[in-house]
Length: 269
Image 1 (cartoon, rainbow, N blue to C red):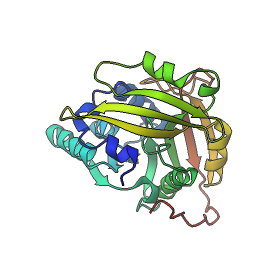
Image 2 (image 1 turned 30 degrees about the horizontal axis):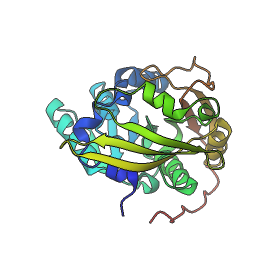
Image 3 (image 1 turned 135 degrees about the vertical axis):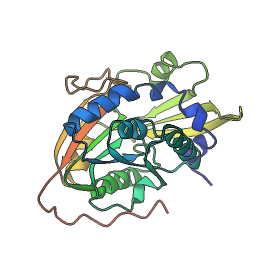
Image 4 (image 1 turned 60 degrees about the vertical axis):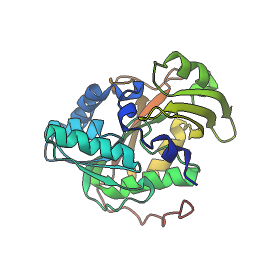
């Protein structure tokens, strides 16, 4: 039986690019470039790359990029766009929980819940962070956005998503936030590229800043900074507040040799 996030993105490449969350690419890549210091020699790993919107834009700006995703549909759309724009991005089907890279990249990005934090268990989500850490060179940087666990304590997730819905986009209803697990359970309705309507029972994990910091520090990231995430306008000038639906995380891997990391969990096989 496929997980909800696997079913969601089947035959969804065209529709994915129309979603509201996919409209901030240029500004987000501007931020990524600033974090890289415009170093065109940097190798970038785009985890949960979807249809390749960040991968392709960064390649257009002269960076070497590898994009990985679990969805064949999204990867097919990414490759189609890359071929049409003559951009040399390498797209691979990989499970973010068990990436095959070892100290190969200067930067890894996971934007707009690319893989993390969609997994069924905290152990699976941790495995994604671990894979990202192992893919980075010493001194490498990880930039990702994730759901802000402070937001649902003060606001209705259902109301927020309804207020930001657009015609043709996915919709959520029957939301229920579990204070013991910090998971939002909902029914998500989408229409795929063939016009087929799907209703899926989804569960997404919200994290508070202290959890993210602890998880990353345990993976040999010596610097962890967290900010509010504004669509298409990431900035170190936006302190995280309870008004931010997402948080922006910037972590740097230590340069000296880290202690041995624990073996990866295999409960997702």
